[in-house]
Image (tube, rainbow, N blue to C red; front, side, top):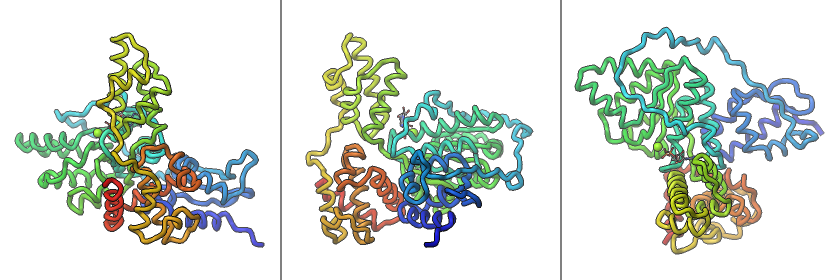
Length: 445
Ligand code: ADP
Ligand code: MG
């Protein structure tokens, strides 16, 4: 039997992965990896930065183990090499020599607590966190722009400020400016009124890193959209880093096609609702920061009842902490229930189960429930199965571990892959979006 070359094995690995992840994910994380010569008993991969390596090992370790020889410790025999920075392509910029432009433009103060170490990682935000760290480490050289989207209170502003802190600390010469979209619009209005618009333009165009929070507020502000788009383009054309947050993916924003296309140029990353274990870890971290300990049991109790929004988890900690301190009480499930009951989100009347999701998805896609539960990998079955996994993760407030076992012993990473893939696709595919909405309505009815 002929043995495969590392390059062939890698190509096969990519084929498998290509079916599982979104095009953007593939392009950003897999396409830049090169197979190097050498490596007698394994494979040598060149990665553009350390985050690509970590991403690969965090998310695809099992697949790597099944494709490549293993070391005695059970790890895949892969040697990683960081690609050299090509100096010629990236002219050294000397922002220090730029004339300091006097401005009275308000700079948003970065929240001192919103740092990377304070951001708790879990399966639904790992990807976006490592992308943010990639950008902070090598501004304008990894993903540009980085577009972070997700629901309210899930940590978008936290990550944006974390990038700002990191760059200010590690790349002291770079000029970083963080604004809210509202702030940008207000600046623009003021400067138009004071006829100082040129000064404002010069200021924005002299930045090295622009962090923009809540771009959704640019919707239906036509006059401002154009100026924003010009600023955006002029920065990107000079390879300056831009990071944007939004409550929706670019394609769902009511903005011009030009603006949407610009925002999709780089990496679009979703920040999801943290699963139960991550919520517990966040609660414990926040409590510790505020100087009190919260027993594991109580943390689980709170995290089971507050699940859409991390900001509310934090509110819960503050309230519970204050109450127990004032009243001299212990932090228990009873005190938690008493003080927090109005914050608690009670599940809809009808409890949604994996079984119901399978039924609903089977009906919509014209397949049988038994097929969805089988191990069949034909596309007709595999795709609806992934949709069902996506819905289960979105609609059922359970840990990934427990959910995946309800799918007949699938692993938690299979479920996560399915969720990521469908979450990526649903942003672009109108038909799929309608099918998923239909399933949701059926289930919630
Ligand atoms: P968004 O901008 O998405 O509405 P924020 O960034 O303002 O949300 O986050 C809301 C609160 O939740 C902040 O206090 C933030 O520190 C906290 N938070 C969100 N996600 C995490 C996380 N993964 N780890 C720790 N804290 C988090
Ligand atoms: Mg925010």
